[in-house]
Length: 212
Image (cartoon, rainbow, N blue to C red):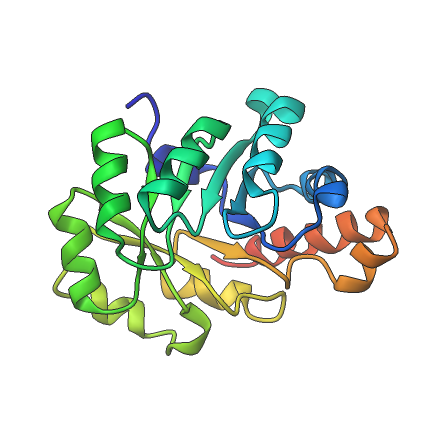
């Protein structure tokens, strides 16, 4: 494949997870996140109009960002996301249908794991970078425990990441994070206060910069 998850994540430590964002606000939401520094987006495929939003963002942003599809847990969603132009997939679990689909179609994938068994399944399919979910419900030391037997694996934290704890995830050894509802306060979205939204997103990157 031309580009893999390692390359995608290299300069993009934060992925904006767009789940449940109304299609009429999707572009403004993404533009605010972009102004805040985000260049990596996931549109959840269980969002109404998810495939439509992926196609919209691909058209609007072009090569400036990576647009992925989340919650891609079966063949139907794989095909819909692929047809919409998603550049990478994410799953909440080690979904074998998706692992097989991405491997055969050379689509970058960030598969969701929580247990050592999950990690082993993903490695069997050749995926070494994984999404630890729900990361916020696990001890920060958990990533170290996984890396012990599974040397060479790397992880992106998803679930429970917020402004107050984002630095801790990077200090623990995560190479990236995915942030959903905590990325932009709901009142900013409700009131179309996109300037405040962009300023809030920028604070996440400022927190990352404090990590040595």
